[in-house]
Length: 149
Length: 450
Image (cartoon, rainbow over all chains, first blue to last red; front, top):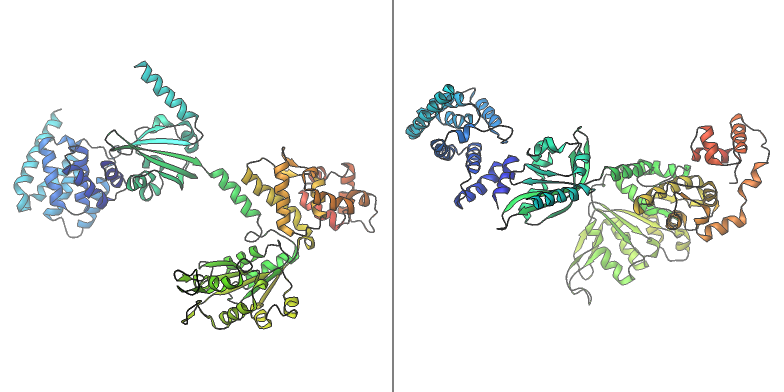
């Protein structure tokens, strides 16, 4: 098992197969940011939202642009399709804080404003309030910097 | 530095000189290298695609389910000769055969992959062409007797009745059996073939019905028989007339009740098997001689099929010759396209005691001896040349023979043939018809010896 095989599963959208291989790579000490970004998506796709957020939190604290600078085509990012699915499933009953959290995470790969919008809705997720608030501070700060530029 | 660049260029030259397409990907599956053959086969421009994901370029569902590099990664070994499909830039599908390997660094960590592929469209085209020329599930023939066989096979497609195919050796009895099986409702079930003359009498029972451990000296473990293997499907018993009388009784019981016992066992087993039998012997004579059971004959002969010898359907010879020329061109890679008129006349007028099999061997012989693109009479086997030459003078007899009532078409054909000195290829071209059609019409109008 190798990072390359996990990448292969990832581009074939076999997230359940990719996830354990990426996890093993991280456990082996591989610090590649691309692995962490893909792992966040795998967790999200498989409904392990809390695990996705912990890793997301780690990357945003380090540098939010690690995620913001993702190109959907050139980085083969599946977020647009995943967002569509999540939004469709929440259309009827409204977005729960947990669902808002994953949408906030996924949107950061392609739309900063929408990410902030959903993360604000996720603040009602009591157990993660502090961490979400911290992420929001970083993102709002980043947004203002981007605007100034 | 310059040496490295030169080495890099040298590698590019090597890769571009390959006839097979080649590309490499990095560990993210982005294309790193693409040789000229790959560009040509896929209609791509390497400058535009280097760095892109391979799945975005090759756009096939197999990229998701059957990626050959994924297979190599999972297996830990290189993957060879996978039949697959790629998309040409225009969207056209291309059949390919490919090999894949994983590229590793000094720590044996995968860092990329390479795929080498061959365009198989050309062979596919030839194969399709061959198939389309086969008239009925691989049986070549337009003669009325053959058409009747095709009709019969189609009519009995829904039946489970036994079939007895009779015909001389080499007439294609096994092909007829194949066609029956392929058109039957049991086509997706097992099809087991047994040549009854191959096994010594004492082994045939074990072969057909199986045996249990210890049934005889060499029976070291239980073995399933051909009837059990064919359960739910069809069994083809070739050379049935060679079956010993004692075995015929056992076979009769399978036909009547569907039951049998393995050799050395008393448990009665039941199977549901359709039986197709074939023989080159005259079964009625065998019955009279006491070598074939009458009750078995009537059980088998529910649907009788007689495959005529080649000498009784000579109009099929040109079709068969053309088919075998294509077949051997494909197999040998020789660019032989046709056979000249004189050679065709010899083939048509030979008596073919070995039937289609002998004709096939004859074309194979001629292929081995032919250097150019046309098979000439001189390249045919001596037996074909000598037998035909000594008993037949094709053109001389017919050319000046007046026809009793000559139709306008016959007159036109005759005049055209005379104009081109009886060269059929030229005449066919002038008349705007195929050589086979011309030959058929010549025969019909008595312009050729039957």
